Amino acid sequence: MKAIELKKDVYWVGGVDWRLRNFHGYLTQRGSTYNAYLIIDEKVTLIDTVKHYLYDEMLERISEIIDPSKIDYFISNHVEMDHSGSLPKIWSLVPGAPVYTSAPKGKDGLTAHYGEMNLVPVKTGDTLNIGSRTLHFVQTPMVHWPDNMLTYSAEDKILFSNDAFGQHIASCERFDTEYPYDTMMFEAKKYYANIVMPYGNQVKKALDHASKLDIEMIAPSHGLIWKEHIGEIISAYTKWSANDTDDRAVVIYDTMWGSTQKIAETLQHTFESLGVPSSLYCLQDTHISDIMTEMQESRYICVGSPTLNSNMLPTVGAFLTYLKGFSPKKRLGLAFGSYGWGGQSIPQIHEILEKAGFEMMMDDLKCKYIPSNDTLTQFAGLVSETVNRVRQG
Ligand code: FEO
Image (cartoon, rainbow, N blue to C red; front, side):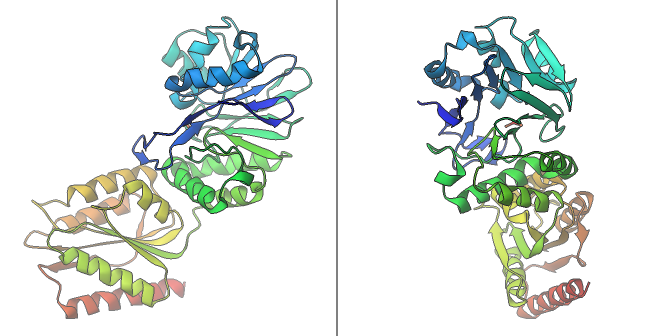
């Protein structure tokens, strides 16, 4: 368990969570890391910590560099326990040491979680001199909690960005130069779609601050450190936070006797025949967080369910509950499904999509029992007309 030197006297001393597969409902197939950073200067400073069960791993890495009781300052960029979970334990080795955190939410949050500590609230523009370096604080509320902030070391040109620019990846590698780029960007997109998406406006402000900084390294609190691909990840965050989508479609459904599946397949084929790249996901097979990732850059979102006891199927209900929390903007929605008698599921989906902020692209597509070939052809025609209309602006 080695500490990794990022730049002279700046070390990664975090923890690798190889087994993590669920991060508040988000399927983390590749595990994750909690990145803590140690700066050796006149005042030894630790930025963030790790989940409580990886404390020993972090301590071992710190101990390789310095006696942990020699830490002078702690910086908590974020209260959430994946980053603050080991703070009380390591702080108890240096009782009384100041913990710099955002004002007032970081102070309030840390106090609520851990009781009284020597918390020093800081605001955007505040700085902390630690010897040959001055650390700059930038508050970034709601990226991803109200307390979030960034810490920037101008001398090292490192932005310690906490949740922003993170990816849930457990790895031996620490830098983007060492890891497959496409996988890293995919996981960054999945992270944005499942963690950061609701806070696009706040991300824009954070990007605005970042654009004024001279950055050679972005050191997030999850995953790998951006060194070679800083331009790419900033540009991806710019696109995602603007809710810019591509001419792509995602068709999401569950089915009881195969009829809603027939409609779903027809929709996917129709988009494909129109030259709109499209994906088809049955909620029995695909995790909702993977569907969110696919939706991140897609314009057309179609959701279908048959009617079961006057409701949609529970898988579709769970997906829409998750989706509603993210309220994706600038997307076009479509509700569809087959039914036997009541048919309530389809207007229910329509209503939820509308409330989540979707503009409905056309009337709902519904049919009683099994859709005939004529019905499917009619549905395909209606979708084609709508897509052509959207394309003409
Ligand atoms: Fe990685 Fe919002 O915590």
